[in-house]
Length: 614
Image 1 (spheres, rainbow, N blue to C red):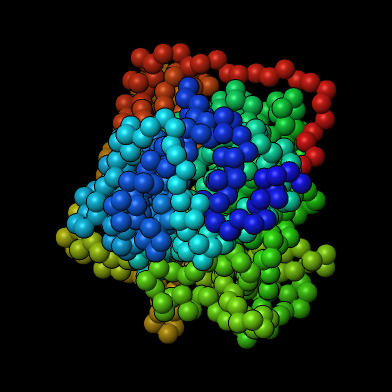
Image 2: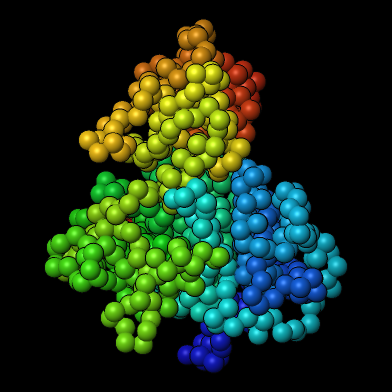
C-alpha cells in the first residue's frame, strides 16, 4: 500500500477528496487531451479552483445546485470539477438542447448560478446568474495556494443532479450524494481490467455530459486516467470517433450498444490486436448478437455495465464472455433483489422486478416527494431502515446466480442510451393545438429502438402534419426524444373497455407517405450513389432527391453513418454539419461534388499478440 492509498482510508468519501488524491499522485500527468491541447492535473486543478472561488463568492456551496453549460468538453470538465470543489452539486446542461428545455431544467433545479463556456451561453433565465469559466481561469495566478476545497462538501451532500425523462411530460432530476459517487469509485477498479484504471491509461469519452455515464469518466480521471475528449461535432461523427480510437491508441472507451454497432461496422476496432482496447458497454440492453461480436473480436475486451441514474450510474458489471448476455455481479455493497408484487423473492428462473439497495441508492428526485416515495421504498431485508430503489426492470436469476434482463414493467424504453418515457413525448405533442389525441410507442429496429407517434388531428391541422409536429417537438425536446415517424389516424383504436388499445396501433409504413413533396428520382450518377447510401441506412426502397433526411426517420446516429459511408465510398471530406445544412440528396450531392478528398483510412500493422483477456 502506497502513501496515497493509506491516506485514502482517512479521507471523507467525497468527490473533492477523490480529486485531491489524484492531484497529489502526479500533478504533472496529463489529465485531458482535446485536439492539440494537453492539460495536466495541475493546470486542470488551477482552472477548477479559480472557478470554485468565484462560485463560493457568488453564494455557491453545500445544498446549492449550479448549472454547467459549455460546448468545449475540456471546459465542461473544468466546470463540473469547479462546482464540486465549491461544495455545490453540478447540473450538466447540454447546449444543443432546445431553449425551452434548458429553461425548464434550470427552473426545476432552482440553480441560482450557471457556469458558461466560451461559446455556449445558456438561455437567459430570471434569477439565474452566469459565471464565465474562461474569465475565472484568466484571473487566477499560475500557482494557486491551498484552500478548503477538500472539505467543501460532506459525504451526504449532493454531488450532482441528472434529469431523466418523466412519464407525465415533466423530466425528473435524480440527486446523487458524494458518498454514493465515492462508493462507485472504490468498486470500479476490482470490476475492470487493471490497464483500464491504471494511472496513465487513456479513455475516450463518446457521450454528452448530460448522460450519467460521464460520471464514470470523471472517476477514471480521478484514478489517474487521461480523458481523450472530442469536440461535439467530432464526437457525433463515427469516422472521427474511429480515427480517435486508432490514432490515439486509447485503452478504453465508453459506448452504448447503439453506438457500438456502427463503430464495429466502420472498422473502428479493427487492428486492436497490437493495441488492445476495452469497451465499457452500458446505457441500454445489449443483445445476443452484439455480445457475441464483442466477445469474438480479437484484441477487444468488453464489460457490460448496468444501472439506473437513481443508483449512481452502475450497480453491476459483467465481463462479455459466455453464450448469453448477463447483467453481472453487484458492485461494492450494492444488493440486488428480484421480487414479486408483494416484495417477496421470486423462485430461481422466474421473472420478477429488480430492486437495488446499498450505498449506490441516490437521495431521490429533487422537489418530487410523491414520486420519490413511490420509487424509493423501505428495504424489508435491511434491519437498519435502509431504502431500495424500484428499477422497473424485469429480470430472472439463473442457476449460476447471474441476472438476465427480460424487459420493462412499464412503457419506459432506451433510445441511444437515454431513458425515455413515451408519456413525456405525448405530453409535448398534446400541447400542439392541432392534436386531438396522441400515443407514442417504441418500435425495435435493426439499428436500435425508435419512437413512433400516432395522432388524430383537427380538421384545420397544418399540412403536412408530420413536418408541423416534428418542428413543434424539435423546439421543446432533445434529439433523442423526437419520434422517427408520425402516423395520422382517423381515430384511435379502443379496447372493449373503451381505453386506448396500444397493441392495435398500426406499425409505420413508408415514411414518404407523410411528406407533401412530390417524389423526384435521382437525376445524376452522383445523386444515385448518394441515394443508395440513404436507402441502405434508412432501410427504405427508394428516396427522392428533394426528401428531407430527418423527415424520413433520420437521426444523429444515422446521419453519422451516412457521412461515414460518403467519406469511404464517395471520397468526400464531409462532416455531420454538412448533412444538417444540406438534408436532401440534391443538396448533399452538391456538397460532395465540391468537397475535398476524404483523409485516407488508417491501417494498423498486425502483430502476433493475442487477444485481450479482460
